[in-house]
Length: 261
Image (tube, rainbow, N blue to C red):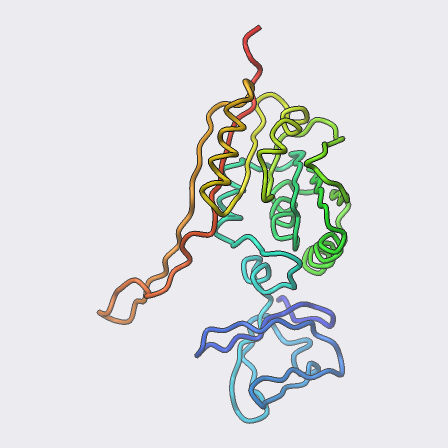
């Protein structure tokens, strides 16, 4: 049985309002919500997924957050990628156990954690970020959820100026101007490897696709977006919810090939 531990990041869930509240359990501290409280000591040692009662009788669910829950609620240094995009990127980039992956634009660390989970202990993730404050936030978020990791290299670097790394299997970019990195990515990405970029706007994706097309070694270029809509199912009342997570960005994928001699 998995229990809630001192020092662990958990979520308190208001099931009526369907809202999550993130906190780190610390002995002696107190969780407060809408004028009600519950000591952390009453949560520590409880089974994961326990319904607890606050000081005035309100019940909440104390759970270990899923990865999707964690990335949405974790401290942010930059805008995060949503779980729907993270999952799609992992599949479309074909991130596999043992892969060597180059990433740039680690931001708050959501994509970095996704890649680390996919490559496993035998893989390696190299993440370049131009802002040192983002690197610090990302490292804290990563270690808070995954613990110490030995197969991650966080590097302070401007990838627009160049990339000094050995050959990799995949290149994943979450940058404002990924087209500026295309020539550098071409140098480190192995033949048969996959290039993937995420950008929020049409002009950005058009420029990226044009840059890939100008390089003779990139082919099978495609762009997708992911829309997720939940449904409300109550007895015979079945309808899509009025709100949905629609456009967040465009995912562009390309394969690096060896041109005919």
